[in-house]
Image 1: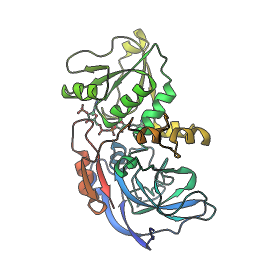
Image 2: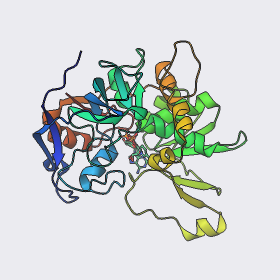
Image 3: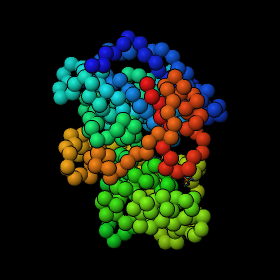
Image 4: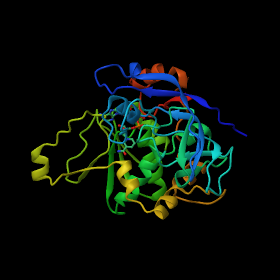
Length: 325
Ligand SMILES: NC(=O)c1ccc[n+]([C@@H]2O[C@H](COP(=O)([O-])OP(=O)(O)OC[C@H]3O[C@@H](n4cnc5c(N)ncnc54)[C@H](OP(=O)(O)O)[C@@H]3O)[C@@H](O)[C@H]2O)c1
């Protein structure tokens, strides 16, 4: 049984700053553990990955982190165990391994980079025994994005989805889900070694953009990342003569577009062994999608060093730097 203490360790940001090194923006301090609210559970967070979006939160450029006041606690995803169950909540009990979609108050500045955080009961997702802690902690940001993107696009059977950034963690998860759905996918990577890495994951088509040109036809272009920089240039001649259309795709917008029933179907929290499903937790449980083990683990009180490490360039698909409690 987990017992919530009165105070906890929390990583807080007192300012957003794109000029300062992000490590200097993380201040570890003691904070109160709030009493559990009605309709909520208090989660004792055990693991959190550091994603590119977390770094953007520290820099103040991520639209999914909009605290009304500072200091605020970052952290958009993670996993933990239920420490307390609020009034009116049924079906959940203390000690259950959980993650959430979304972490209810992360956007408002009560994220997962603290030991305890409140989650609305309807946002909880049970973690099946087949899914390890590190994998469960990476449930929301990348696997849900890969799933949502494929659901949203509904790529027709006679068309191809061409994906650059294919060697990233997100790219590899998209590949595994696309194979499961039968979506035809061309994977574009920059490093030669990544060609074999993706083929080992079952990729049929991999192009190394260092060796050959990628796109010569028109099509719809979906921008889902700012890894290439905040300014995106699309040649006017491509728009005019090749009918290239530019869209943006963001997990938060897609999640907000779902009814509660559609969201439940996507999450499938009540996974039963042996069930074939395309829902996200089911695909983690049956091994279709395997978020990688951590590249390095830091304790929460070393958040600054962990952030600095996460910002170092590493080859695509390497595991995340993770924060433990
Ligand atoms: N829109 C959304 O809702 C959403 C949701 C989740 C993630 N994302 C974004 O998706 C991206 C990948 O996330 P992740 O967690 O998978 O990151 P990751 O595992 O850290 O992947 C980074 C890898 O992507 C490759 N890469 C970096 N810059 C690139 C560029 N300009 N062009 C092509 N490839 C590049 C590099 O691989 P190589 O060294 O092998 O080339 C790099 O190692 C991030 O930008 C993240 O913010 C967006």
